Amino acid sequence: MEILKQKGLEQNSYEICEQLSEELPKHSKVKKPLPRWLPQHLEIQKPTTSLPLLVSSDIIESLFGQFKQILERSPQADMNRTTLLIPALCGNLSANLVTPALNRARHQDLPIWEQENIPYTIRKKRQAFFRDLDSQKKREKYS
Image (cartoon, rainbow, N blue to C red; front, side):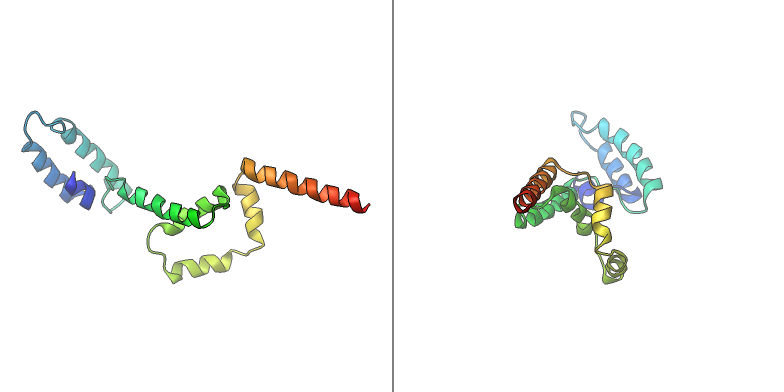
């Protein structure tokens, strides 16, 4: 487990784990399932990526930990919009990658894209309803 967690699953770690699984005692809980699991998941890794297949949820847990820290800074943030931050927390984003993306994203296009791609939450619908109600009352007051 330690090898797979630290190195991921690829041909070298597969061979090491296969060898180690043969040395496990007969009563070990992983003695039978590990030799089935290893080749099955190596076949998933090979055509998918040249990188090792992650075998631990640590990275995902870390990602959501970072996401939660950002959310704590803005308790009133719209969850739909905020989830768009998650890809920005993945990997190493360089200026060469981010700058062209920011240059192509015009501020005036964002509300349109949001309306088309991010469904409104109940909270957002409620806020819009009361905002419209308030503006209607103001119009009636001044009419």
